[in-house]
Image (cartoon, each protein chain N blue to C red):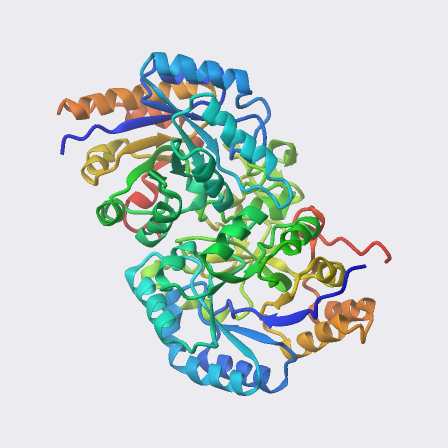
Length: 307
Length: 331
């Protein structure tokens, strides 16, 4: 077996619109207690939300840095307005040299002024040819899209010249993005006058099949899975293939505890069976999913072979 | 403005190609019989010989042929996509329609003289994105996503100077194209990599009392009165319970039809109009292409537009039409 990568843990950008105070408290605790190596900050889903908490970001970032964390600024999934483009140009010009920027729309590449970047999970990097184009353009870490199977993830990681490949490991999976706001639409509001109704659903707004089985979670212009994706039994195989970073996506539950469990799993301090049992208990009645890893429908759960 | 609006038409099969060419298409687009294109459905598309014959038929009648190689190869399996680009070039195609960065790079290096069109699957909807593709890969035309208002289309063309192809008629998704995983979430098969959204083998209809339920995989997508007729269970057209109420969460089942907006789109500087529907019948393709041909000819001659709207409404998806994002308020 090849050597395992260290298996660094990252905390993805908070995708939901939490009240500013809740957001500040969340990151304060992450800085002090969570065994994650790298934290992505910023707004990916709706740039209108930034007005509520942008002023807090420098202090949050400083506190994370003091705690020894790598800080990455995430940028929007869709860049359509001049205001959004200018914000990225300003970020690239102003943010500290040691901080990185994550792009989630290729439109960001020419706005970075030649700065190195992290290619985020919403960029379509399905194969090694695309990965290599991005590395040539300045990517220092490449996130794989959530739709890839374990086999494809391994291939993508194996030849990555940057040595840094990140995969989504925990949380509701982002399935789609739109120019339309479905949170506003569900409240019969227009996007331009949305009244920030998305703030009411800190873990997403449930959309269920007509017979009541929950299916999706709506988060403004984004649609996520209802189930929580959990990559656990596959950690070591992916590390052996060269995956260096595993992303935990913030949900409305104790993310410090989730990070501790994942760290223990990566360090082989606790068996994956035990980690899984604990996660299942915390997350219930929401189901766990991992179908994409095994080439199955994303909403399915495929138990490990040994179980 | 006297610019000519080019009519780009779907050719799902060699027969549909001939119908579209004969009905007045300026260009047709098609794909190979595999997952290298975004309409990878059974019974559709071209083998290599059919493509060469199709190119000859079209070129003899002054019509161009674009080959869609517009899905995303999965890691470790680049071969079919590279061969599709090579064979499109070899067959004399006038352009390849691409979405994947790796394949854009491949085409630019190996076939620099073959025009590269950016597929809607790349969803370049801003001047920044368009500039990125033009500057990095020498893309000469961009198929714009169905999310822009006419004024935004005009601004985008003004800012980038790019050749813009816009959707004029056919199905209308609401998610950003090429970045929607709803179908694979429910079926395991993906529009991005497999070229199929809501594949037929995962679709089922069940009579439940007086009602008809439609399923995609194991997911109940809608339930309607049996007489009403159920729309095809595409994930973004499903009806779901949200805040206790059944709702078309993303979009009602409607079809895009820009016929009444032709003059505005021309004034916006649009180069080409795209008719969606490689999966549609020859009769559908013939009717839609002919209707648009008559309207574009009238527009070019400065004549009154013929009354085509009613005829097209009958064949539109769900029998209902929309201007989609071209009108304000869609978002």
